[in-house]
Image (cartoon, rainbow, N blue to C red; front, side, top):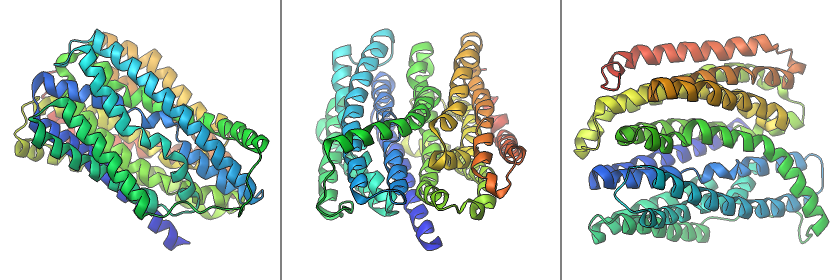
Length: 465
């Protein structure tokens, strides 16, 4: 069992590393190719299109949890109904994501002074980028099936192949198109889809259970409702990520367009860190769901209580690596999009928020594996409420730095509400909520303090202060 777990954790770490490499390489190509308004137009479109996978509301995790639970409670035909219901949801989410982000792009472009394109040209660019990311919504059910089977290498390889194809397509398009923004986006999209189709021919499909039995329309409708009920908690999580992380670059384009390029680069690096930690935590979802279903929670109590320190340490390590490699990377690219001091200022503040949020990922994963939608959503709702009532006013008064510090405060307070549901799931092992609270808060405060000791003096040299 441990061998399988570590294999799946390695697969998710590989997937996270490939996602990080993809984001960094695409950003590096953009930095090396465009400057000024052209780079800003590309960065804004990429920032908006990057929200599309978030709007999947973690459907793959919903499918994983429901399939693992069904294998201990129902016949194989229920699994088929769960999968078919999930596919209906994935198509609906893809349509909602495209319409929502297209409209958001039109509003942001029309209200901001950033970019070198007209609104119509920008929307063409955005449409191409949205089509590039659409498969990440449509393949959620397939990935959820693989995760439920604890065959995490199949999604990891699919993601790696698709992303490698996208980068190669963009490189070819840039070589042919003489730095044309739209042609570069077309190359990215075409390369992604061609590589994805090739991956489906090479890699095996999810195992089909239940023989030739097919669920009735009524069974599919029943499972559709149950899927949506579980997904509510995951949807709140997606909304939280969208508000406190992925929506910030477009917001900066509105309130401080002169700082957008620096913030976009810092935000890209920050997303890499969060993506690596999220990928690693995903490997725990199926095992935790299975262990809870069979009543084996006492065996993972100690690991669970150590998860905040482990997550904070990993986040701090990756952030530090990015911090010290930043100047080397920008010098190699001869990038002139923004001042490295300003990039580091934003990365320092984003790093505080990231350490605080990622420290709670272990608790959040356990609650997502076995808790109710209400238990999953309360910490995130608290964080979002504080983001609107504290972070936004601070941003209005003190600017970008006030907004980012306010978001860090919101994450710190909101995450503490995950301790009680975590303790309830481990009640049989005698885990008190105060032990969970102490473990989480200590990891957050110590991790944040170490990060600021490392980067604080450099961040305070920024012209933004």
